[in-house]
Image 1 (cartoon, rainbow, N blue to C red):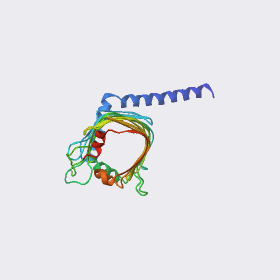
Image 2: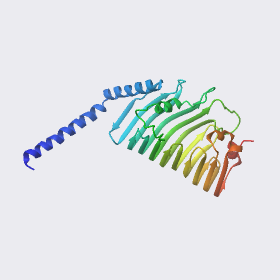
Image 3: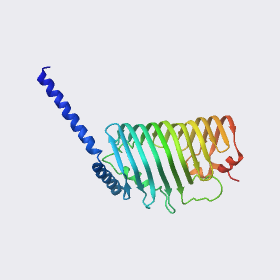
Image 4: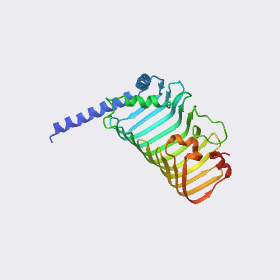
Length: 288
């Protein structure tokens, strides 16, 4: 390769690098960030006929995406989702095939409010799910492909989950699966894989508290969950005044709708090594 050709190649590479660096700098400037976040919020707000806003988005092409202060309202103008920070390190994303492979997903300061309002049958999230079903030009629906999501490492920090079916509110003592309010959620998960309504996962650590008084101090397990059963094997759990070490704990319920009638419609199978269970803790799940 002669010196002239070498100089041309070097200059060409430098020009490309300068262009890419300029695009990166402009994209991450405060002016560009403002315009980009406004455009995304407006597009999604119009698509879903609701309010969507975010303060900042940072993208490293083919590698990393971070979003700050994402806010989404439901159709009743109440909060559906707020997250102070969402961090995604991604490997492969194929929207047409509904396939998402993530190396890392981190949710910090998130609040997710999942509700069925009084007199309604669908969850307040349904309008977003239904909007994707209508995107025939974006999603290959001919084969009815289920959502496939894989996350190598998932971290949840100081988050809050609310689930409420306002058609089935029960004010009696104990935990009610149609009216959950789970606070101070901190967890580390790995090897999370979701296909349709089936999820495999490993919980490295998880702690949280529920409004009824249940305090989950720690859990370690590998699990599988779908619309008919929930299987944990093995399981180590510490809550309130109880501790359980089990080779396996399985819940069979036929369908999600049976959970509110836990005593008569949810069947539990346990293979325990060690169990020290407080009667007070049992009362949260099976009140007299």
